[in-house]
Image 1 (cartoon, rainbow, N blue to C red):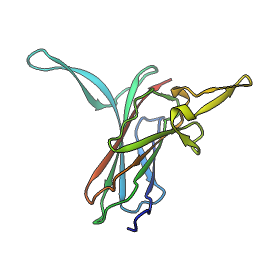
Image 2 (image 1 turned 60 degrees about the vertical axis):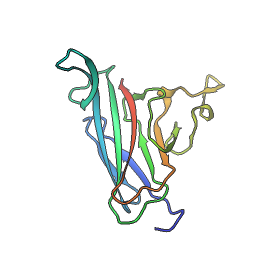
Image 3 (image 1 turned 45 degrees about the horizontal axis):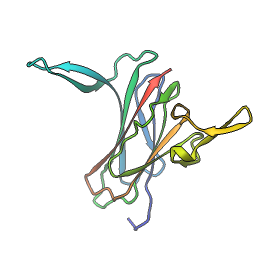
Image 4 (image 1 turned 90 degrees about the vertical axis):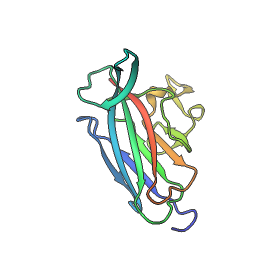
Length: 163
């Protein structure tokens, strides 16, 4: 793959069933897997409480879902500038500061087209311009700074609450 070539990946989630589907604009070497999970409290044999992720079973309004998209490089060459674009599922609101992706630059969009840092996003309400709130973000983009090596994976994660 030539340097500077970009693998654009878009992950979409079927919010109505809380399952996930992934698709890629340029499938190339990258395969996506999307998972919806809930954080649950677990008590171990010593009575110590920890929090663990478990598959999302039944989600009701007000519940938080942890969405994880894993990009796997299935080719024998590195993939440059891997980018994951993921919509916030319909009927859900993004949880502020919850997006995570080690080694990536994360930006957000209100319309799925124009991306920027939270301080760069604004909306006009009643004729006045204001900074967009996290619950107004409709898409999240992770751009991984390092090439994704053959057989390697990159993980993008965020939280959203069902309306």
